Amino acid sequence: MNNLEFTLLVGLGSFMAGFLGALTGLGGGVVLVPLLALVFKVDIRYAVGASLVSVIATSSGAAVAYLKDGFSNIRIGMFLEVATTVGALFGAFLATKVSTSAIGAVFGIVLIYSGYLSSRTPVDPPPGEQPDPLATRLGMNGVYPSLSGPKSYFVHRVPLGFGLMFGAGGLSGLLGIGSGAVKVLAMDHAMGIPFKVSTTTSNFMIGVTAAASAGVYLSRGYVDPGLAMPVMLGVLAGSLSGARVLARTKTKQLRWVFGAVIVALGVEMIYGAFTGKL
Amino acid sequence: MFTKSDWTDQKIEVIIANLLRAGVTLAAMVVFTGGVIFLMRHGKEPAGYHVFTGEPSNLRNWRGIVHAAFALRARGIIQLGLLMLIATPVARVAFSVFAFVLERDWLYVGVASFVLLVLFYSLLGSAM
Image (cartoon, rainbow over all chains, first blue to last red; front, side, top):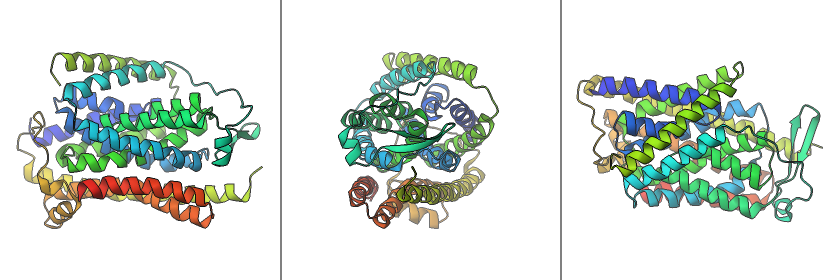
């Protein structure tokens, strides 16, 4: 395959990944690395580098679209970014130390878990009783607009959420993904933040988290311009069109199908890791 | 229910979101331009990403990248676009520090500054 053919095919695949990722809310990054590694036989280190860069593009590009919801909480986001950026730095250093099959295996587990999450419908936590005093001191409790007028929410279990965010950042740095699923989970389940606030805040955090590991990837030579170019442009165009279509589609079945694809890719990644194909 | 500081937060978010969009648009245009040149010059060459060799040292740090881009090397131009993309969230955090200063929220000036330091460490410390 020559560069032109490769660029067009990878660009098309990345567009589809970004499109479906935005449509299902699962993010395109998570299928991108398996797509590159398994289908295009790209070395997983190049794949992870290109994916990480495209994660920054989608997160930043979607910020305006999320804005009109007006749900994100910049204090929660900024505070948790302390955990995710340090975690991401740690994960990126780890990625340069461990074998590619170990990365492949961890990736497979994360894929299967994300697929499982996609089969569940998000439920808002019951409206909080007592906020975490730490959350109050950090000014995290907020208000979001709902159908029945502005609704206030309290933030709980800040240390647990902070710890989980360190893990989310680590995975992001190790695997070159946004790990939005883990971020939302930490905010929903551990901290009791309403789903709409946690998804938008998570999108804001993903780009900053990815930027923290991007420097390490760049200096280790993981970011190849010839590969990252079609991946980044494809994912960006795909996710922007996906977000546009989102408003008029029923996504439940699509989520299910995409979830199944993700699980299948996860199994394939683990198989590849154990047979030394990655 | 909405206090004065909520309103300021929202205004800050609008500025930040537009800043991010501008950064991404600009970066994508640079990457696209570099990509076109790359394919015009090297489109017929075989694509090889199966074996990891790592990038040449001049495409691993920002000085080398800027240099290669201004020498109109195709891969250098793409890499410059990617560097601009990586800089976008960093600019966002830098702006947040400034915004928290305006709000006189010193606790969050500290928090945002710490995040900014981590980003600088990653980008300048390792990719100098």
